[in-house]
Image (cartoon, rainbow, N blue to C red; front, side, top):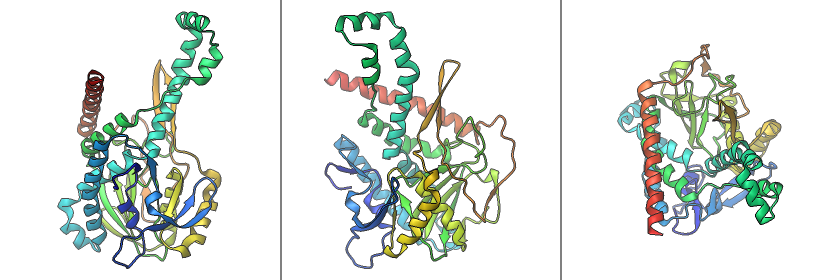
Amino acid sequence: MANNKNHHYVPQFYFRLFTQDDSTQKPKSINMLLKENGDIKQDVSIANQASKNNFYMNKDVEKIFSDVEGKHKIILSTLNKIDSIKAYNKERENLNNVFQVVLFQYIRTLDMYKKIESLLDNYIDIFVKPSIVQDNKIKKLLEETQVTKKDLINHISIKPNNKYFLSQSIAKSFFYPKAISDLGIYILSNKTDKDFIFSDNPAIFYNLAFNKVKTNSMIALQSPGLMIFFPISTKKCLLLLDEENYSGVLINNYYFDITKETDINSINKLQIHNCTNAVYFSKNSDKKYIRKLYRQEKTKLKQNRIKNELYKNKLIVIPERINYIINLTFISSKQRSISNINYRNEELYKFMMKTDELIDKITDDIKEKNKIQK
């Protein structure tokens, strides 16, 4: 990560895992398709992608992220060198590092920040704005300041603090890997002529087994049926899988060759649906293929935000699921009852709940410390 104000929420080294450049210098460009309109831009600068000015707002956070990225680069490089089940088994003891790599990328993105923004917006709509209308103290204050309720309601907003959002991201990415450590680790090896693509939100939490559940998106860390897709090059994709809820030739074949282009297309379409602003691809010659995938899905694309519902005076948070049902030839969901679905592993679920409490306490302590220093 460069030491400047252009902070990347998808690291530049990750982009370079997908570039086709045989030179000794670091590749500097890649191809991009914009989610908003399907426009394709060729040879865009990697340095300017999946980044935001001063996103971290803290040099210490930037330094920590940079150090972590260095370790993750080595891990993903090792995974990309695995070319057989024999090589996979040789590295098996080191594979648990993958959980931290995937969660770190999942939590740190602009998309996650926007989801939290969406949560706060809905909190205002459900709790704050009604209280403005009903609260007599606010009514009196408005009369004194000559501000109308309508003006106050229209202008009130809450924005998440980047500093604390990212502090929590760091903590969660180190504590939470244990919560998904019960998932099987699969390397999908692409043996077709089509490449894997990736996006500015590349770690995809998905659930084919319980896709029809309406009251729950089923993509929490301990959700039964969870699938996590994370491409690591044009020819390799990680799949972290709740094996209990799926069947097919993939199961227990932890290094698996994909030979059908339809499977690659399905996985690539997930990236198009999950992206915040753009998807990226390696070869200029693939632009016709990428545009075709986009056109097939563009009417179903939406921003994956948080939906909130009020239930017994509690705000129920439901992340919107991807508006796409993946169709893969090598795996299918088992027919399971969808009643009383809570978690995959009770011990890991309780660990996750305790971790939430700990991280909240740490964050509150940091806030109080900063108040005292001010």
